[in-house]
Amino acid sequence: MKGLITVDNRFTTPPNFIKNIITEDLRSGKVQEVITRFPPEPNGYLHIGHAKAIWINFTLGGEFGGKTNLRFDDTNPVKEDVEYVNSIQEDVKWLGYEWNEKRFASDYFDEMYNRAVLLIEKGKAYVDDQSADEIRQMRGTLTEPGKNSPYRERSVEENLDLFTRMRAGEFKNGEKVLRAKIDMASPNINLRDPVIYRISHAHHHNTGDKWCIYPMYAFAHPLEDAIEGVTHSLCSLEFEDQRPFYDWVIAECEMESQPHQYEFGRLNLSQMVTSKRKLKLLVDEGHVDGWDDPRMPTISGLRRRGYTPEAIRDFVFETGISKSQGVIDLQTLEHFVREDLKLKAPRTMAVLHPLKVVITNYPEGQVEWLEAENNVENPEMGNRQIPFSREIYIEQDDFMENPPNKYFRLFPGNEVRLKHAYFIKCNDVIKDADGNVVEIHCTYDVETKSGSGFTGRKVKGTIHWVEATQAVPAEFRLYEPLISAEAPEAEAEAEVVAAVAGAEIEADVTGAGAETFEQPEKTFLDQLNPNSLEIVHGFVEQEMKEAKPQDKFQFFRHGYFSVDPKHSEPGRPVFNRVVSLKSSFQLPKA
Image (cartoon, rainbow, N blue to C red; front, side):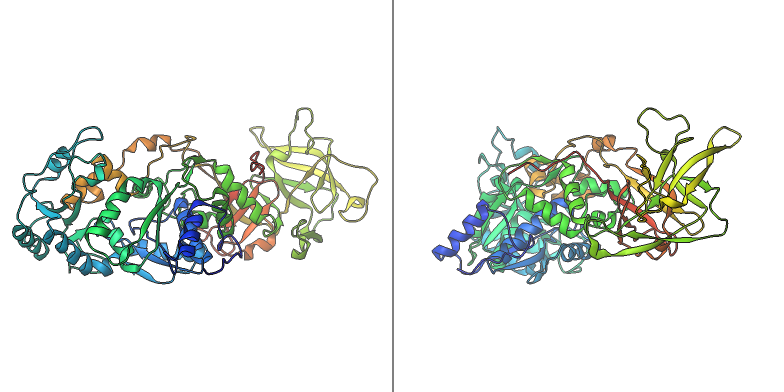
């Protein structure tokens, strides 16, 4: 048995049942080398749930000195696109993983076709002429058995002839399908003669127009695992009922390799939907700014918002690997983002809702440079110089003309400390014709300079600010969850779930794809949060004009922010708020 590799959360998992299985398989000699795979369908962008699947497959593979392949299950050309292939590769690499080999299900289409012919020759598959609706109606329900197709007893010779003609393109989409011949009365609906090939006259991103028939995912997937020598086929729990068909395909197709499927609980987060069909609907209908919108649970969206791969890996490590299902509070993920950024992000000042302050006793035209630490919790990040002059900006809510009790910020006659600078005292309030406060006049005490050792008196309030003449105009994008419901409908995205419900048969039999039969119900759109994005304009410190896309900062009192790579322009950055500074959430004690 090869030794375990334990470096960080990319390379180790906490104790779990799959690790125990692998350990025993290696000890007994059942497995010589562990081979896993991450098998996404290139029909959308990866989301936070996939991050857990990526971590499990790559980590368990590497933990035992084995291999992990990246394999694209591209069996439905109607829904798939090279854009998705490229985004998936980028996401896996960004999370910190390198695959052993990159493969496609379409690489094995010839082998899959030959195995389907073998099933026909063994009397284990037949060509069915029924319509999609007829197949669905005769399939039965979870409590009632299905009925045999009138074409179920076709001869081997007739089935071989029809299947050959299907491949040759003689029939239209939906005119015929190839079905496995198992048991229409099985209590497991997945064994009721499932469709294993359908006609689809569609251009494939990898094979072009070579094929007009395509294997179903549930038929192709186990064959791919066997061809690649996968030892432990790891998938989420909704595939558990599909495992008997997985094993049937391996056995009846007489595959030399005998992989086994193991299921783990999928990752569901509060106030998030992770159905790719629903996410695609959000994109297609313009509810979000693309798949990488910072409000989306996609990995690309989280990356653009400013999440780090380390935080995501720590998060999925904390969730562990088990059979249990549940919804994890979004605050858990946000906790790990804060923990990762608190020692990495420089701490600087930004004013999101500016109010101008004139320090009337400060010399006009003078600019003073003050020293400020970049991160008080990480002295190795050093210090910076910030300008100070007669005019500055503060936050509007750091001033009140008629404050309530225990308000310790700025108000007429009160004194506060400016972070890294001086004490200032409010003397006058300037208003516009409508009575709105547009400017306040203050005086400063030259003896109270930060770091000077002044102890003559204390103030209860400290506020942040930016110097007005050199401040950099900036846009700030403040986010709330995209879904207002605490626990939005938890819909598994895997094709097998839709197959169990009988809805997907029609799409795959006809070759129509997502446009016709897989459009999700739009009820979840009623749960969209109208306040999920707030855009405000303010100022940041002068050195921030050099900030680059994805640079991250902690803005005092406001939270952690990241420079948006899509909308920022030179000299005018756009900042996405990654997370706020504090949360009431605490990890449970061990």
